[in-house]
Image (cartoon, rainbow over all chains, first blue to last red; front, side, top):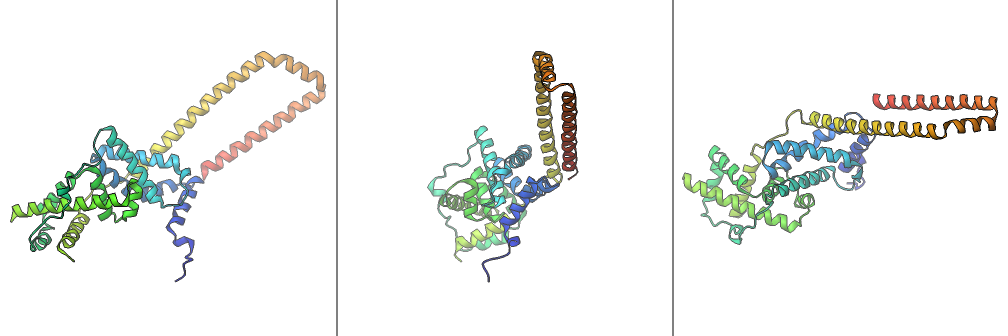
Length: 199
Length: 110
């Protein structure tokens, strides 16, 4: 397979084309950008701030900032990552203003894998679709601090790579892996505790 | 796959099934409206401010140097050349004005 793929297949080419169209003042180009990235932006902010009205305002602020600073986008990284970085920094600043800690210091015990009986994985599998279990999962996710929650969901739901998440949050890849490990351990422990109660 | 990996795979599955809050259907329209309002309000304010500054400066200059400058230029050029110069300046101004207007119309229509 040739390494010289046509530029049209290059996602960065598509990003640069869209940005150039916006710079030329092409009608509907910026609306296209908003429609393309609004879900990701909304999810990042909502997972961090957990307040519908604040999410709406901050998400609008993100796209205003994108509109003002679009000339600074050089097309060297994906537009998705660039917009996600802006969304993350705006939500982070909002939390700092409200004095909400981004991440809590977890004690080392919670980072350890939960010791369970061999049958528990199967039990979890049979209960994972239960409404009760879903509710417990919601609560467990809400109980996480904003940063680990966002990292966990970006990785598992939006399927971003650890490198991409590190770029968005300006954290080291090791820190992202550590947050993922701890959050999953916490979820496992909470869900299995819940399972123990229901059995 | 060990036990922990198996459980992580199930957590992954459960997370994929979560229903998250989504942006409202009219969100992009809202953003565009917000940007248009903000941009047009800023441009309008700036244009008005510059217009006022220009008018005040022009008025002050005319008051201070208008008459002596007019008479001096008329004397230096002679009546006929002065009149033709005024006509040429007028034509140039009109031409520039029309060009600006047409480019603005083209920008708006695009």
